[in-house]
Structure formats: C-alpha cells, structure tokens
Image (cartoon, rainbow, N blue to C red; front, side, top):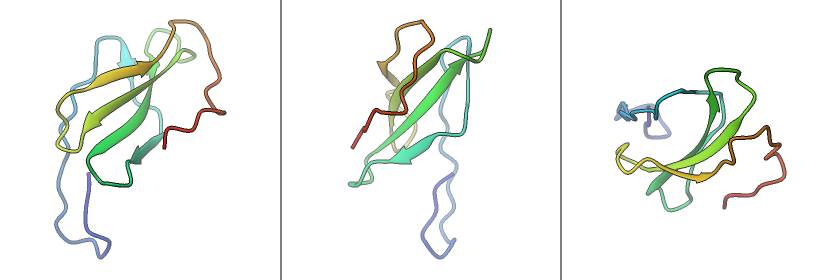
Length: 79
C-alpha cells in the first residue's frame, strides 16, 4: 500500500511475486517516488535473499541482486 503522509489516498500496489519467493519486511520507495525496492526470500528455506525493484504501480518486477546462495546484503545501499 501507498498513501499520502496524512493517510489519505490509500492505494494497493499489486505486485506479482516470482515463483518460490516470499515477502520479508524490507521495502523502500526511491526518492523520486517512481520505484519500489524490496527484498524477497526463497520460500523453500527462507535464508536466500534477493533484491528486486518494481515500478510504483507494481509493474516491471526485476531482480537486481541475488545469487541463489545465502548472502548478507545488510551492507548494500540501494539509493
């Protein structure tokens, strides 16, 4: 969901997840408001993390980082 700072104009962002992925809790919106940056975990073990982007309307979901191995991305700055 996105909304104005006052809580008005609440809008659901429909993002279709790739197969075998689940949502963790990491999500950010780029400073220009055009994209969402988020992490997804492998649903088979929850330990492999991938970083994705999508347009603010939920389209164009793109994996930008992810090797298929357990990786710590806590040091990565996206913007």
